[in-house]
Length: 87
Image 1 (cartoon, rainbow, N blue to C red):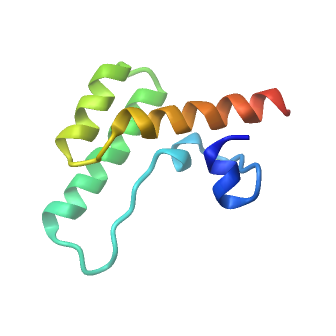
Image 2: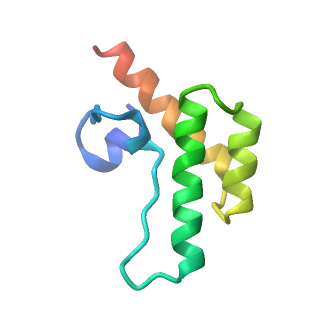
């Protein structure tokens, strides 16, 4: 079972795969935190659509302060593999 499935207790298959990669901020975030959220989510979309490669995506995650981007990506790919195996 993937870590996402273990954590949520469901096999989550979002309508948009970006939902597995996207980040959010709360309402009282700073302007720079909001801009970082937009940049991270755009980078996720760009990677999923092939506009940037995996290295550039991981570099952007690191640049915007996402800790352990390889671990996050590994969790994403494990969940996608889990869903595909059980489809």
